[in-house]
Image (cartoon, rainbow, N blue to C red; front, side):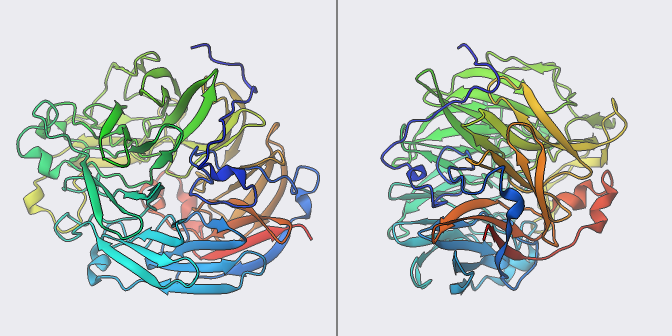
Amino acid sequence: MALILLGTSYCEAATPNDAADNGADWAQYHRDYRGWRYSPLEQVNTNNVKKLKIAWIHQPGDIAQGLQATPIAIDGILYYIAANNRVFAVDGKTGKELWSYFTELDPIVSKLLFASYNRGVTVGLGKVYFGTLDGRIIALDQKTGKKLWDTKLVDTEKSAGSNFTSPPTLAGDVLIIGPTGGDLAQRGKIHAVSAQTGERLWAFETLKDDPASWPKGAIDTGGGGTWMGGQYDPKNDLFYIGTSNAAPDFDGSVRPGNNLYTATLLAIEPKTGKLRWHHQEVPHDVWDYDAAYESVMLDKDGKDILFHLNKGGYVSVLDRKTGQVLNVWPLAENINWVESVNPKTGELIGRNEPEEGKAKTLCPSVLGARSWNHGAYSPKTGLWYTNAHEFCNTVKVGKQEPKDMAFSQPYFAFAELNFAPPPATGKPSSRLQAVDPLTGKTAWKIPSDLPNLGSVLATAGNLVFNGDVHGLVHAYDAKSGKELWNFNTGSGIRSGLISYAAGGKQYILVPSGFGSLFPAFAGAVYPGFKNTRGGAALIAFTIE
């Protein structure tokens, strides 16, 4: 495959189910199935972005873990979810609350590691769908917020505290969702139900029942969650989702084998649950390098491709019909867990594994070269805009027995785990980076004092919007990286910024409200996290 030069745009032909046709809406988690997080609206552009003003604010009333969701915008109405599974419908022109639904949750949620937050709802077929903290999937009436059905999919108590923290994916009339649990002593699955009735359709075992992958006994506590949402490609009728790390995270001696299908990108037929292809990015993962992040889909020279970032700092470029590796390039600037990755096959070369009785500094850290917050791709520039950070962890393997663990206790198996700056530089760093997604060639970078933990938004107005953990939302020129506007929302950004239109106006919507497990881990390397502020507010900006 001949990779194209920096700055040339790629395209993706529209399909009958392509929500991108309506520029006013943000109808799916990434706006459409391609994972671009790109709005074709251009009323707000490089010439007038400095005139953005607040149009309205909506507050959900619960600031636990802030706001981590990407709102959905359809026909001028916004749908979003806040802490503890509070769901809202809001008028996109005025911010007036149209309805709300506060989920009654099992008291067990107070004991969970993955609690309070939720990353979004899914809207379709006249319904609003979301996964719950106590292992259910719920459908609400889109117009009224009335509950239509409620299906229990995960026994949170019996699965060591796994639950749902990301939105389901709608594939025709099939609804697909995966639970948390890569770091828990449980056995992961992906679940599909009827989007109309909630009836169970199939379940896919993310831990392959094969002695070459899992020895007897280890599979039952092998982790393998799918804690981020997947994406449905209507062009190829495939559902793509990345899986998490194997458990225990660092002690691979108790689970010899390649540990399929952990740290793997899966392509599944949504009607049947049949696996079409898989690409395991980290066989026998002993670094906690999930493959859970977004897939970004492009069309190049008539070939359907996708690219996918792994926590280990590499981006894999794949044929999305077959899973064939087309290229692999490093986003991270400090990598020592492997010597390299073969760009033609994806094979790991020169593994550097944690050891029992010996502390090793490994880069990137378990928090990855980027967190789960998504990048944005602009077809106008051909660039992918993503946050990234550089720090490492020092780890020493320790033994851990699942039978002796408390409920929802992580199955890490370390005797020592500390976060540290990269040895090569002596200091951590973070940035917003504009990069050719097929070659890894960088166009520009903007450094930041702390890791940016919100998802990026790109627009046809040649703008890139990015929020930081201090609460500032920034607008940059997509071609040059020049900052054109910023606004202090009062609390850090951990959510998905979107753009939509209502009443003939384009809006930039910022869910402000900082909350994350990330600072609890990374605070030793980035002490500035102690100065961040909590909150929860949906803030809409427009030009009067």
